[in-house]
Image (tube, rainbow, N blue to C red):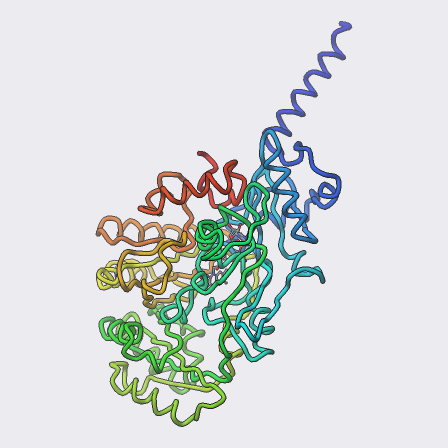
Length: 510
Ligand code: FAD
């Protein structure tokens, strides 16, 4: 019974406490203003919801979750981290639709923007009919931007396929869809931003004003600032859409006709262009075939069996109030007359503009994983990609379950000053393998994704990953290529303590 035992015990407890708190949850060991501390949630439900995302593969626990009720709450949080002796990481969860943990912050704080969306005050979505723009909170979902602007007869020009994504989330990447060949990605259609930098300063920026910050943030993977407002370009909204799909059995014909549209020859007739691939795996790819008349299904299945892959070109022509339906039909017939699709395997329908843009429903299923792969491929190597990836890897492995998208984009529609990275060719393709798998077998798809990258590396195909999932600084330096030096310098300027968006795993170890 030594008299030193209680002191010994206290020392052990204190050391254990500091090791646990300093190493793991330093967000909670920093001095926080009481009004902020009261809004930080540490309960298991909050922590669990911020430890997963749509991909459901990466899981990483924050120390706390902030449900902000104002922009000032977010600003206070960033300032607290900036002024803390050991700053903590802060990630913004726009709508949690990352697939590789990009919206997480291990031991830091996740800012869940859902609470701002639900709050009645704030920027929300304000449409200026006279000036053709909308001021939109970074937390807003594109689906709500669509409904609000369409109610005033206006619309953004560039979209994503799926609209349950936040404005801040897609502007941190690029935001691409079938309109991108014509209008550029969503990041090319923003006039102005309000941003909270990594120092906690709220700055308004545009091409004229603080242009360096503006360029950094767009496509900047959340590294330079938190977008709290974006001024989005609007145009008059079409009333209807003539939506067409045509099947191709031959890859060269398919890409030649796609490129005719993006190179401009057919610009007047297409407002949207994508491509969808159907692989022979014995079951109909419902989301492609349901577009066609059910009586055509046996023939479609027989075609895909014969050719292994069916290529489906998808285009739309917008219909404005003053347009005459029959003229749009004639224009489209004229386009398809010159195209080399399989005769008879073409269909078209008129749908409302909103119906077309909301064609991908909002489905969440926590028992599934999404080992996705999104690539940009230079046009000069697209045939090698078809043989080496689509035929020799994807077709042969025969595991594809989700949509595979494949369509060309114009480099000149992307602003080279912005942070987003794309291949160095006038035309490049996007290929998206949107796998859905069970909780236990996503590695099979991950293996395929790795095989695709390995093939491209060995064949010297300079692909660029969209929504990249790199984990080492060397991989990121390679990814950014000639843009890396600027990217790193901008980081040192706007987020010198590496606070923002640690889930992207770029600067965490630097
Ligand atoms: P989150 O996953 O919440 O966040 C993504 C990243 O952005 C994180 O690093 C986060 O910190 C950062 N971020 C979020 N909000 C802000 C903000 N306000 N300020 C600064 N940084 C912020 N992409 C396309 O381009 N085209 C598509 O058609 C398309 N379709 C998709 C369909 C589905 C079903 C899914 C799951 C994804 C799709 N994506 C598409 C990818 C999507 O654009 C990105 O994953 C996007 O980041 C998701 O938005 P989010 O609001 O859920 O972002």
